[in-house]
View 1 (cartoon, helix red, strand yellow):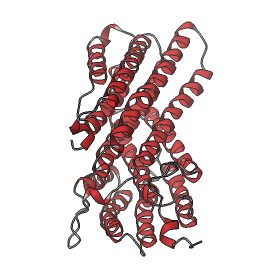
View 2 (cartoon, rainbow, N blue to C red):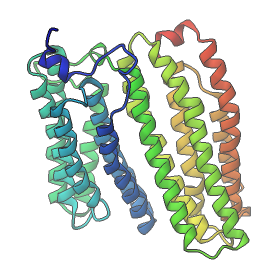
View 3 (cartoon, rainbow, N blue to C red):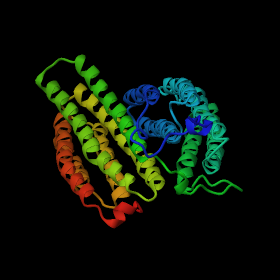
Length: 403
């Protein structure tokens, strides 16, 4: 039998039944991000202000970017390779430092967060360039371009970590803008040019499953936060109703994503002529809104459980309705990218949430939470049938994946 080349062992296989399978080392790696999502929601609860919301948005974007870039790398590399396993375990250590520093990232641990995040991003990319030294020259050059962009943003992250107050926030915002703009620009680099999306020939089923698992992470954190809060409270009718609404809303979000959105996305990326472009836009960008929506919804559930009746503050209303709205908006944009349509169930759900927001002055927190959960349930039921029809009768434009 002819021995496998180093390149064959290093790269993920394509086109067979196991090519999209998620490995145990990837699941182990994801545990760090369970902790990160928990830190994000708890930090927002402790600083429930507009400033806290801005910080939550920035740190959520950073955490998601670290995870999704790694998911892209492992979409090409074989996670059963010892080199890749070493890489993921090293990233876990950096991720643990990064996650642990989230609560005080804008105070005493800012430099720790910035250094850990930069080493995570730059170190992973540099190691990937080294691993690809003997093969796939186009892909290797693409990672060289990515490395250049991440080194630029890393400088801004570390400078922000060394700064204080508004300067830290400003530098980190610029760093994120650099990183989020880079894929849309094809990671254009002087003399090296840009990377065409055809080079990003992703294994669609693997990318879809990986992103689905991160949604599970976020939903799992929501369940944990709801259960932990509920266990500490008196179990009166108002609290029981708030607990039930929180659980139903979380279950409905699972149903919306996995029975409608994920199924549709998997179908269309598998039939796309340019899966790299679909994956870049649909999975890399829009899933950030899904994750943010779940985190904000978990915070809203916590607030409702603590104060289910009585006067409701505007900030609490914004969180109770804003979390589901962000989640539905992410689903709308995802479906628009992969299928070319604006899905009626999700758009209708957004309109209903806006209507409840206009009438929120006449409601308490528990009633608003119940209504938002009912909206999600309605979207999940309608969306399931809608998705079945879309995947059964696709148009020529939808099959091309060109949106």
